[in-house]
Image (cartoon, rainbow, N blue to C red; front, side, top):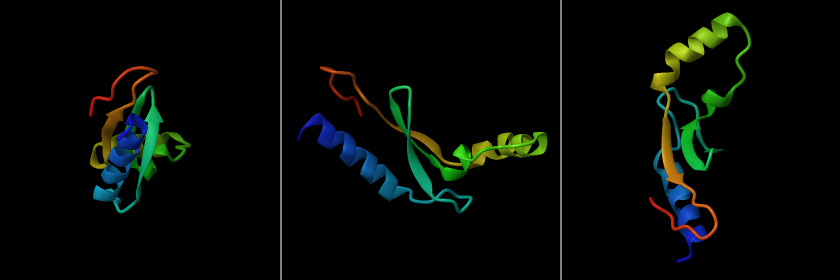
Length: 80
């Protein structure tokens, strides 16, 4: 199996295993700085206003945010 196929398989399995956050929102895969994360969709919602940002910061630990895989650069092997 190629590295690309393995990466896609890992992402799909992680998403299928946890399709929803405990808050009830769906989870999404997000690319950040060479890593793919599974996180609650509410974490990427825009926060406008001081109160909305405070509530988001206070409730962030409740939401799912887990790394799935560090995607390697050209010529590197995946480590999952």
